Length: 397
Image 1: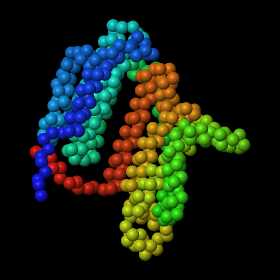
Image 2: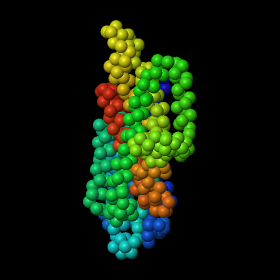
Image 3: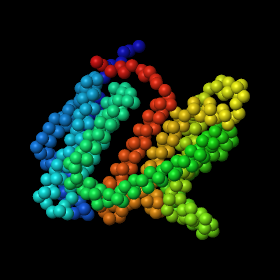
């Protein structure tokens, strides 16, 4: 057999570096506007650089050149460190320029983050993720890198270095509304996931035991997934409004055609498919000999499910629940259109008033919640799977 040629460069990181260069050259790093409703004048990255932040050019050069080097461990760790440092440095630079603009301009002036900032942020994060994958980094190392990035950004925010940015001004103006919206968003997601589990686990067990049940249930769940969220909300509004009018006790309990009830029901319906599929996949990989041994010990079918099958199926079940949770966090934003509230209310308020930073104030926490939930599920899945010995990295020393 022919020996594989040694890897001499990193094509994924090279493409990311090219995308980052296009973002820097073709998009504004910041926008300075006289108020929150206009787009303002574009400010490039080179125009924004000042003082010690000129050192960011060295980090940009390292990110651009590293993909063309042989992907050894030192080079890959250099990519991770440079990406994290550059991500924090760009945020600090944006805050410093916004502070300077606030001192010399009108009190109503706003400095917003531009496309180059967001493009570079995505490129830098994907560069770090790609390097960690090539390093075959374990979950603990990945969590440490994520915690480092979050800590650097948190320090910048708590220190007040970014307070002059438009999005931070929107946060200051909407602080009470923002806190209530975050809690409401989390409540909507949790209220949808609880019935999803109560329904999804028995349904997953049923379709595992019954081929006819599988043929009957999955087409229905697949059809629900194809219905647009706005359409599903509309379909639920009329029957829920009729129930609330016909049974006052339901209305007193919070059931109505608008608000949280139709949103939670719709999210539950959307979440059933990944949970049922995850439960089915987990139960199908349980060895038949284990079931037979449980039956030989005198366990009932219910005992076998909860004491034998469910623990063994837990990793795949959690994987399905992870998908459902991330899906629910995103779709919960749309429930604001039917009066459910949450972060979607802030996002749509920004859209309707053409305040782009207000839109971001609603969107970014949703992304953060999804990332936090995804990380938590990764940890849970890792713990339920137990320690595993991975293959050798195969990276050059």
